[in-house]
Amino acid sequence: MIGNRSIDRLSYLDPASPEPWASFLEQIDRVTPHLGSLSRWTETLKRPKRTMIVDVPVVRDDGTIAHYEGYRVQHTLSRGPGKGGVRFHPAVTLNEVMALAGWMTIKNAALNLPYGGAKGGVRLDPRQHSQGELQRITRRYTSELGGFIGPARDIPAPDIGTNEQTMAWMMDTYSMNVGGTATGVVTGKPVSLGGSLGRHEATGRGVFIAAREAGRRRGIPVEGARIAIQGFGNVGGIAARLFAQAGAKVVALQDHSAALVDEAGIDVPKAGEYVASHGHLAGFRPGAEVSPENFWLVPTEFLVPAALEGQLLPARAQRVETRIVVEGANGPTTPAADDVLNDRGILVVPDVLANAGGVTVSYFEWVQDFSSFFWTEEEINARLERIMVGAFDSIWAVAQERGVPLRTAAFIIACQRVLSAREQRGLYP
Ligand code: GLU
Image (cartoon, rainbow, N blue to C red; front, side, top):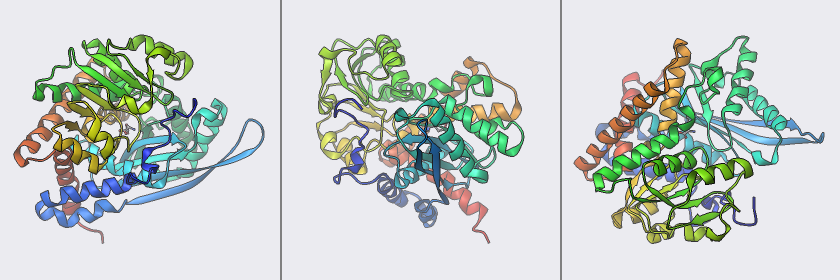
């Protein structure tokens, strides 16, 4: 953390903001009246199927022993194995992981990927640990999950604070424990270990595709548009690059260290190089730094929250000067803020669509691992484009037919898929 300008402190810890699971429950309540006879099954979405809490002890480099709390939540498994990332962050809670797992259920079903929804996390700050410590933490966490995960059970992937290296350690630990190499147990691995080309960029690429499609419907081309992006990591950083390449102007950027505003446009590749060597944006353009609250007030065509949940609360939603919000993060907008944006005529492209590019290419990775036959990057990007555009079209059509926001439309499509699978399978015993 640099100074006190960190956005690590989630605003859902603010008493004015509901906890993420409360937001998810409210979203389920909002979709229920649209589900006809399937609505009698919605209660099942309010109860995660399985929840695991594990102790993760580690010997630190200085010889002391630290303990961290780890979680894995399988929200639903009705349409296939669990799927969703693992987050290493100091503010991770069970409540947050439950919500993130619920959003994975909806996301996977909205994109028609053959998965349930799951998510994991360890409550720690990875920046406070050496690579050796992170490796031991990751291996112990993976071992503690035991048979809970597996290529046909539940497949983790990277999320905030984890990356390709974390996935390599998870894959190796699981493989050692089962006595053979099981590449399909995680996705987002290094390409040399059965990872997929294009996976690293996939979430940011999907955000860009979703923004472009939304802009088309509203008559706002990406080319020449002004963009504000909160988060400059694997999602925000890559989306920023693609926006800039398409001729948009990135006028505001915020990461955990600083918020930058430049109406003439920020040099995204240079910002990327600076962050690669310094680890944060602070100091890149000291003259352009503004207070974090001012980030939200910059006039733009597209606003992309791509950091943490609970960032757009009603008061901010009232003040943002944008036309389209594209949710790169999971859960950045609370239901009350959704209402404010909707009333103001600001289009919200929801997380379960906008950031689904990552899990879509995770699906491609898992399929490639099973068949041991790997695709070219062109094939991957073309398939990602087709799936994202197809999902956007169907969600847009339902929103038009029913006169509901895109989030509700995405939840309608997803809940119909999950709950009809549930109904057709029938309750056991
Ligand atoms: N963590 C990413 C997400 O929230 C990717 C999950 C995955 O690839 O399984 O969608």
